[in-house]
Image (cartoon, rainbow, N blue to C red; front, side, top):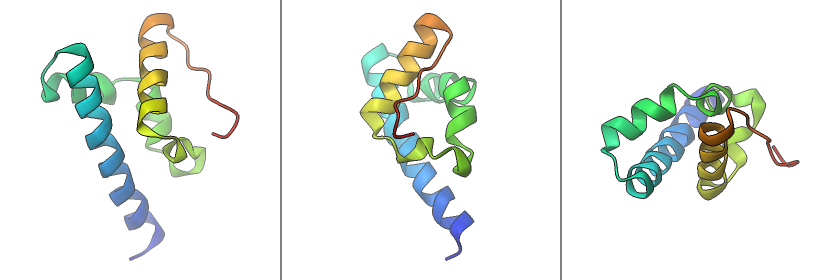
Length: 80
C-alpha cells in the first residue's frame, strides 16, 4: 500500500470516529455531523497529509471542531 492510500485509510477512520463523536455530543444525525465536519476549516486542514493534523487524537480534533464552531478560529496544539 502506498503512502497516499495509507493516509486515506487513516483519514477515513479518523473522520468516522470524529463524526460519531460530533453526532452524539451535538445530538444530530451522522449525516448532519459529516456535513458540518466537511464544511469546517478543521477538515480542510485534516484532509491535507502535510499539515499532520491527522496525528491528533479524535477527542482533540473534536475540541478543535467545537472551538472553530464557537469562535470561528482554530488554535492548533504545538504537536500539530
